[in-house]
Length: 320
Length: 100
Ligand code: SF4
Ligand code: SF4
Image (cartoon, rainbow over all chains, first blue to last red; front, top):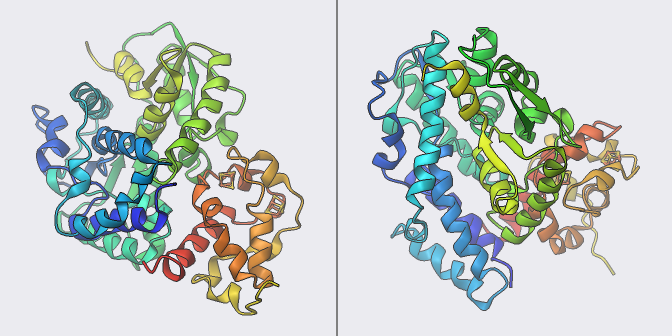
């Protein structure tokens, strides 16, 4: 049987309500990437991760467990799970990430902080108060839970005196830039993705990579937030030739990731379709969203090399 | 025989966000959908407009399988807010069917 929809959504929404995140992780895991970077706490302009890159390694191991039980009688576990989860954080027990994956995803955040500094931006960071945006719960239509959470996140940002948010992934960008303002009267935060900030500042590469990549646009960046040109400008500036797959830019094909939480098998099938398109265009691919990265990688079975765009950008724009 | 609820479109929770009536049933959305969701959005939205509540409830898997990727919206000639409409249906199902 498929995973029980109502109970699975219930667990995710309960977690957001009780523990501020769909999959609660420790403050240490959330902020470890920033160790040694000396980012000041808070400030008018902050790098806002919304925990996406930190959560994905945990969500991946959780989804693996879900994928194994989907279509088996065990799928019913979520029914009991939801009840227990209110008292014991059982979803975190199911999610033990691989440390190599965690290091890789932490490294992406380090790249982004270094790129911003190199472009002359000295962002602050809110450490354990850098809260999840609620994107998944919003997608699942739990609008009341999301609204309450959005107010909490906004109050938190206001308490820190934040005015400008520099986001690192498309989902957090969309939530904080387009969804929250519709929910919160007087919302006045200025939100830009780090790629927009770098492009606007005409970031200058220190070296030319003389490389070639296939670009996989995130549908949220391309179709919800109109971020299409910045990534191309930055890659071209880095000496990287950008190859476009069959569906690209505003008409990019989704990686399938949004189906993961309820229908892991459908998510893989969608990712496989996209991997075929990417493979036809070249053997090195860049993504700009942690969900795309992990979902495509899973479907690619090492047939293509997939990296976050920040890996290429940091090589070109940051000192060795 | 299907039960008709004449107030269904208003009851889905966020009537102001649900703009399915502009749909001219051209089928472009189904043709470009990466999930091959034939039912979404045109037939499902029509069920809502016709008040066929039980048909919508029976298709919850389709409603939650949508990626909200907006490929359909980017190609829709009528400017239907397809992804937001799907979210509205989820909001309705969460409350009405799953008691969330
Ligand atoms: S593309 Fe737009 S107008 Fe055509 S069937 Fe789909 S929703 Fe209706
Ligand atoms: S949003 Fe994407 S997955 Fe959903 S119906 Fe449209 S094209 Fe299909």
